Image 1 (cartoon, rainbow, N blue to C red):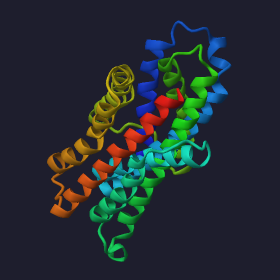
Image 2 (cartoon, rainbow, N blue to C red):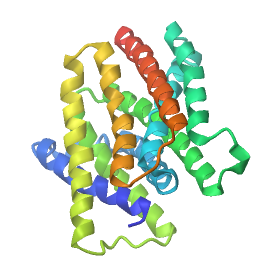
Image 3 (cartoon, rainbow, N blue to C red):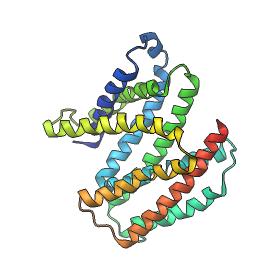
Length: 267
């Protein structure tokens, strides 16, 4: 199935389940009045999904997920430049580690890389930028609509991505038809697992643990993506890539700690 269509069904299946769980007791007028704010969040969310899924096609789930997690640096730069927030020294140590690690993963001979590999790399960075913008717009949405719970907001935003992803698929000439039962089962597992179960567990669990443990646990997503890509898809990972991945994970940990500490002080 095409990447955009996969994103469409992830949000359709996940959004319907989230709406059933958290929105069914809401009056329609409560939902309609916040649709404009939800649509803005959904625009950036749909861009993130598009870039992320396209990146997986070209560089695999491991590197695409790793690049997408660099959003923490975009968020911290936003806070530093526009909000004049104070940034911990760990952030300035994390940036060169991330750059060095990415060079080791992608390869120092950039000119010798295939065009599709370069494209996948930039799609991953675009995913990180889109995701950081989505988080900023989502935070604004939550602050403006405090009578809605975070789960209700997530249900609305998830459903509001459908027009963007659907139109994008049509423009690209992609069919929204699901080819067979196997694809239906996989895409259903993706929508329920990633969009519903994963997000709900994170929202419930992260506020109950320490900041340092939060930053460490968030690294499991890119780390396991790399590991499972190697196991499930027989991806060969060189020793240099292992070292590079380790450096990026350390940089993400330091960046997450800086970002979370800023968020805690701001709240």
